[in-house]
Length: 314
View (cartoon, rainbow, N blue to C red):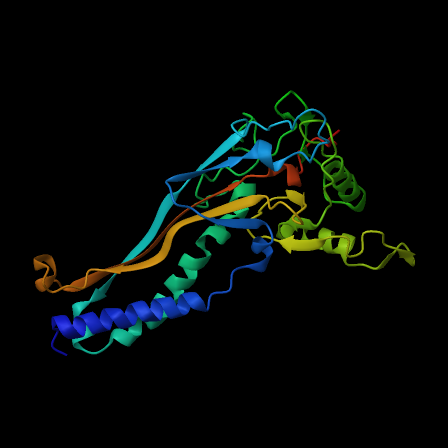
């Protein structure tokens, strides 16, 4: 095929259509979707008024008490992600453009799911590329200057709270961690009415988790009080013995803010001198977004390894 501006434009229009069609067919991971609130971002970063997410209606006596939303304001920046590739001029001239179809469909899948595939890395430390850091909730600081999962959190006004334990996953310890989540209090000391809904583990804890949640009878026929008590989520990204109990029923712990994309871009103009004698034509798939744990109080995290000292949160 002789390459002209007309047929080159048609080819890249077709490739973009192929990309967009593949995007429409992407199914986002359900286990992560349960944890995520998605918003549209229109600036380089978004702010989350933590103080406004907490508390309840109050009885009006003389006048309504106002919440200072500037208190505990969490800022989450947007980050750009992209993958560039090249289509050989010879592939177009030889009518072999179809060979790129599978790769483009795969890129669409990767671009659509990229924020969701990074969510586990907000919880656990790894080499992931989470928009906002890869230290995980055990190492990355929240807005109160302590890590997202910590024994030393404090609300404005000084009320202490604790969302970190160090316990192996056993039936008794699962009950303890669930109770610690239920006992969570807000800035005024009022119980936040949290309910355990998810148990998140890695492969190393999967068998223990299933024994706790999926056996209807234990101990020679006794009813298992934790049978189907919460939903089980297994993340391959958790490579140690860490585990989490989460309430996702009301406020979602993670925010994904979508700025742009996923987008398809291509250098497909022969009128561009740099393209006229080019042996390949460059394409790029990209998107811009930010993500973070914005509600760490709905999580009870357990940072356990074989050398851990067993502790129980107050």
